[in-house]
Length: 78
Image (cartoon, rainbow, N blue to C red; front, top):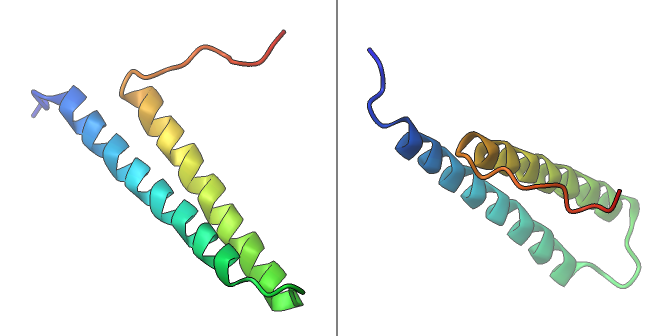
């Protein structure tokens, strides 16, 4: 059966992706607030893991935005 409201579904997916990205960015912020003055190897590993998750959710959010019709022109100079 064909979905009668594909645009609404895409917006719902985009909202979910944005929520996941916001949560991932918030986790990075929380980590940075409790980061000691001299990070140890475990802190560096945790930071790398958090950044990877944040970057992944940002990419997923962008993909969802593209699918919802929110493609942006390149902002870089050529």
